[in-house]
Image (tube, rainbow, N blue to C red):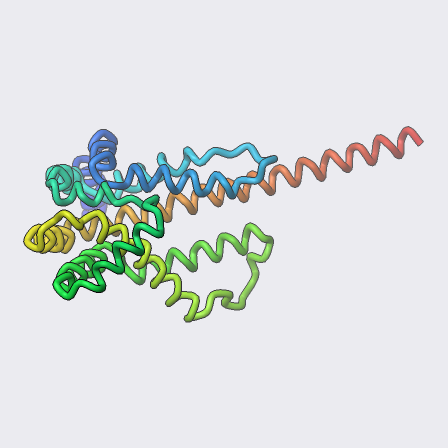
Length: 252
């Protein structure tokens, strides 16, 4: 019976797992493709100049994670959902809008008493899209990896304080808030309400969580490979130095 159940589970997973083609189409429709590019560009700056390493692993690991954690039916439904013009608005979120322009727009909203409902709706949309616990886990996961990179992997003291966590969460939400307000300024309150409801569906919330965890998994894999590469390079240089020292002694 146990063997039958095990085989059935494997069969179901193979039958209903999302296909690579589906995942690629979904990534193109959601904003995940742009997020991946931004993440790769950011991590490229962390690679030491003397280390040959590519951030291409991030996209492949991210895709693999989505294929394993979203079913074929879920991805099919998500593809249909993201064809909705309101959800496509999220693809237009631009983090490169000049800060001065954003602040001026924000000030104009704050001074307009009729904009309070718009502000509230945008905040609710962000609440649906951003999970505090996921952000905290990401923060501490990156902290752990950075300690390993610095050679302090046995560091037992907590480096980040509760105040650091709160500041990080606040800054992250603010990073979303202003571009969201700016991008959705042409939407009516009725459309904003609809967008709020769309981002609050269980499938969209699951997809957001899977994307987030997939990104963290991809970054983790990238950092692990980079750490291994740095250690390997260090060992090779140490062996080379030992060989040169031995050669020098023999010649003496």
